[in-house]
Length: 312
Image 1 (cartoon, helix red, strand yellow):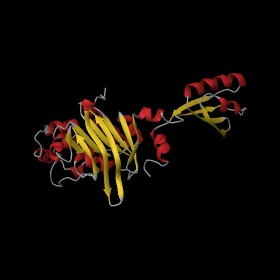
Image 2 (cartoon, rainbow, N blue to C red):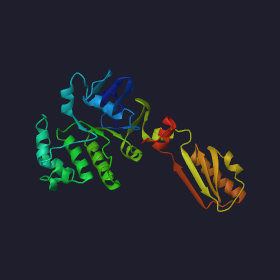
Image 3 (spheres, rainbow, N blue to C red):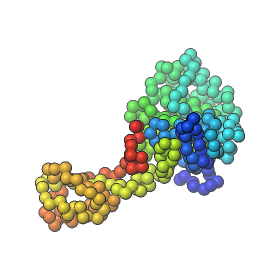
Image 4 (cartoon, helix red, strand yellow):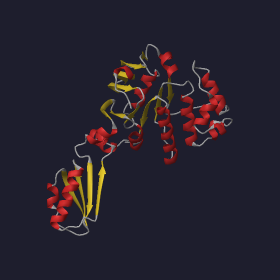
């Protein structure tokens, strides 16, 4: 259970602005992340996701505004913040001639707290690769190693910037499970992603960014539920009947006849619409051979807010 108490705020962003010339890459962003939460930032390329994280991590100086991590202001105590967080960047580069074990041992020397190298490799399923080099790993193995490297200092907060980009579905799902296991340890996770299903599967809350601003923020379920028309109801009657009555059913916003007895309805109340369809079927004699209710998803939310797709 994720707490919403102000005492459990581990990341706080206040009126953050980051400008590059005349462009405000981040334009007045404010939000909080609570202890034990998986918090996602979703948005298209150029929305300001990575720049926001860089300010939180202390890798970039804000034009204005402030960021706090674990009660410390990033811009005032950057080194103390870095000791207590783990960061996976969009692109990582490692020493070509060092083994996984040697890389982790090297990274461990930069921190006061150090996890066991062998235990980390075992946890990500790479203990048998301890003497191997990164370039010999598959894409999924490299991503798992990169996240293992973020855990070398036993951080309280993990920040992952598009952790599954370029992975095949199996490797992506494996990484989702690993991220959940990190969170189950009590660590707070902040991640950016282009993948709607990833955000829906992993995140307790999501901030949707566009043009440097947060345009919506809530749980995935609440974001979808807030849509004016959160459901599509599809029926197949198998023959043509008078469909005008369907337009007047409770919750129905519009009706589209696809022909040959297939009808799609956008509905704000799926349960009431389905009940009405059953009543309509009984009264009209139109047999309902197939009925399908499809809830909206985060892509529908994003399109309704910004009018464009996530990867545009």
